[in-house]
Image (cartoon, rainbow, N blue to C red):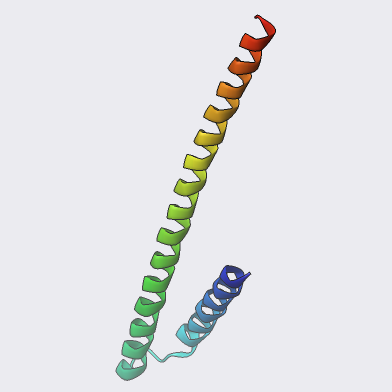
Length: 84
């Protein structure tokens, strides 16, 4: 699935940033600035992915509610047909 590959790439990117963070010297402002930019960019991507997942969960919740309502309706129709 495409989403899994994308998530794997985000995880690999996070691990690489973590490794870079351990190797950056505290007095190397250019490296620190570049690292902060990369962390910010990855954070933005992760936030977008979280929003996408949240929307997907909301859609699934609406579907479950609709299916449940349909099931209850069908069950009540069957009960009426049986004379209960």
